[in-house]
Amino acid sequence: MLHRNEGALDRAVRLTIGIVLLPGGLLLLDGLQGGVLGLVLAAIGLFGLVSGTTGFCPLYLPFGFSTAWRRRSEVRLNQ
Image (tube, rainbow, N blue to C red):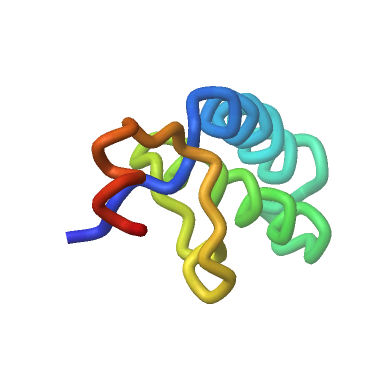
């Protein structure tokens, strides 16, 4: 099972960006007609929506990065 590695602010920013970029890329920048820029922005928006909804970012894994708040008991167990 994948553990959440995004904090509340990180998730909110990702969801906001996703809500703006997905329809913006598809509708305003001709992503539905195959416009490359529109498709790229829509893909970034979709990634933001999915990662913001799940609270997990696969791009954080290789770097061991996390913005999630950890309880003190978890910190003691990991040391």
